[in-house]
Length: 329
Image 1 (cartoon, rainbow, N blue to C red):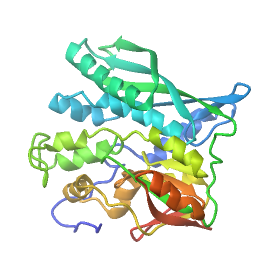
Image 2 (cartoon, rainbow, N blue to C red):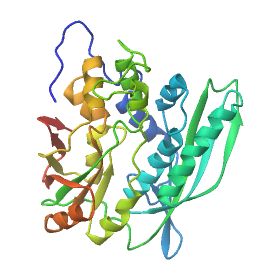
Image 3 (cartoon, rainbow, N blue to C red):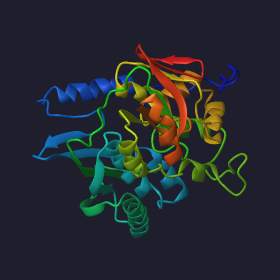
Image 4 (cartoon, rainbow, N blue to C red):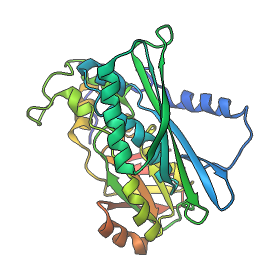
C-alpha cells in the first residue's frame, strides 16, 4: 500500500480520533502497579491449579458497537465478543472452555438483546465453549446506548502452553482475517463518514453497504489449536489493538514480513477516505492478517498444509517488525 497524497483533507491518526495507544498502555501499566505479579502470558492471565493452568481473558467489542447501532444490526457483535476473548487464549495455546458476558444498556431493548444472543450462540458453537451466565445491567445514568464485554476461561495442561518466545530462524505463518475485526473502529468510523453514510454501497461489492462491511465479524481461530500443537508452534500473536506491533509480543526479535497476506478492500477504503499513512494503518489494523505464529522453519510447510495459513516471513535478531517498507518498533 502507498501513502495517500496530502491534499484536500487532513491526515487522520488513531490518537487524533480519541484513542492514543501509548497513553492507553501507560494507563494499564499504572493500574497493574497496584497488584502483585502472578504467572501471565502476553494475552491471558494464568493460575496454577495443580496439574494444569486456568486461564482468563476479558475484552469487549469497542466502538464497533456504534456501527451496529447506526444500521440497527446487532446480529454479529456477539461473535466479536466471543472472538476477542477466545483468540487471546488461543495465542497462549489455551483451549477456551467457558464464557460469561456483560451487557450494559440505557434501557431494555428486546431486539438488541435477542440479536446479541444470536451472535453469542454462534461464537459459542464454533469454539465449543459453554455459556455459564452473564449480567444485563440497565444503567441509564452511566451508559448512553449499550456496551458489550465478556470474560473467557480456558484450561491447559502444563505441557500444552506455547513456549511464548520466537527464535531466530523461525518461519512466520500468517492466517487471514475476515476484514477489520474489532479494533481500530474509532479511526475507521471517522475516516469513512467524512464523505459517506454507513448505508452507502461499499465500493467493489454490489449489494453490500459500508456499515455491513465494517460489521464483518472477527474470525475465530480456535481451529488452530490442534495444528499449532502438532507442528511445534513456539509463539503466536493475535493481531488486534496495536496492529502489527503485536508481533513483538512474541519476544524481542526482528520479524521480517516479506510476503504478507493481501489486505482486504476495507483497509484501502479507510486509508483513502481518512488520508491515513501506511505506518498508522499497520499500527492500528490487522491489514488482512488476524493471527501470526512463529514455528521452526522445517515445520512451517506442514503447518501450512494443515491450515489456511501462509508463510509470510521469518525471524531475525533485533527488535522490530519489518513489513511493506515499514519498520515498527
